[in-house]
Length: 79
Image (cartoon, rainbow, N blue to C red; front, side, top):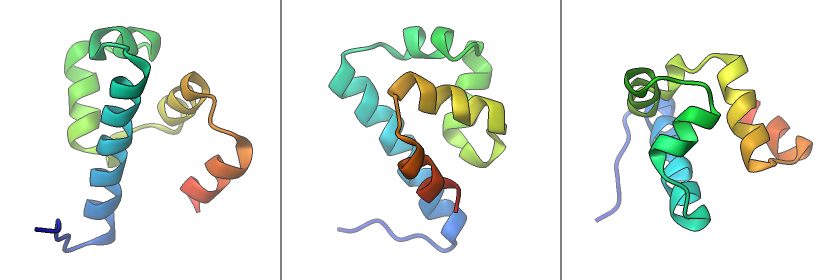
């Protein structure tokens, strides 16, 4: 059954969390290692996954840099 979202932010939050989970799966990296590379403590990392709208712009760019997200994709994400 498809996921239903009431708001655009709910959909975006779900997509962000899935993207992080997919990255962890594809790269073989652990959540612990990812959070350390992102410079976050455990509680903050899980809070951001639960509520991606609370990510700071600096944290967002750090995650994009870690994944080598191209500039044109970053532009699509922030629009």
